Length: 144
Image (tube, rainbow, N blue to C red; front, top):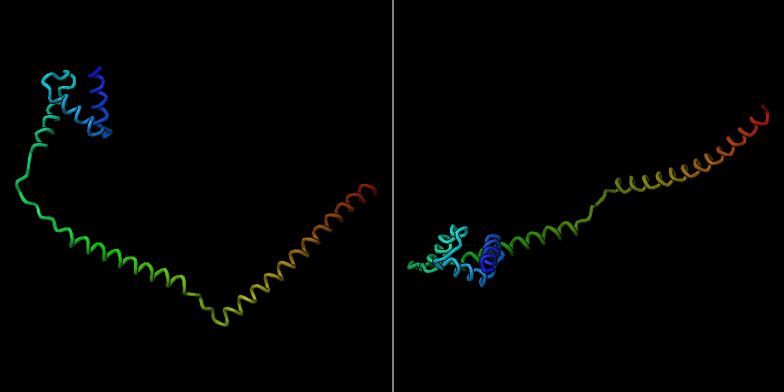
């Protein structure tokens, strides 16, 4: 039963789905001298992890984090200001039409209204023509 559990934990470990407690169970299992023969290939890997965990660096590391965070902060502010100016310029700029363009728009609207009225009258006339064609068919039936 324990071997099946170890195999299941090992599969979850390689998929990245184990907790720290489950990883500790795996380290303890592979730290033993007796490991199942088909899992023996993983023993050196876990032994290496144990040795790597014990390693300590004697070298001092200095991190200068403040300089980079200030620059990043200013980049963000500058980008936001440029974006705000661009959006405001786009939103508040109204297209200014010349007198000639305004007159052309008025003429276009009047022409469109005239065409629409002509289209309605034409459609009414076409409906009346359908009555005339029915009358002509009936007349031809009678006269034949």
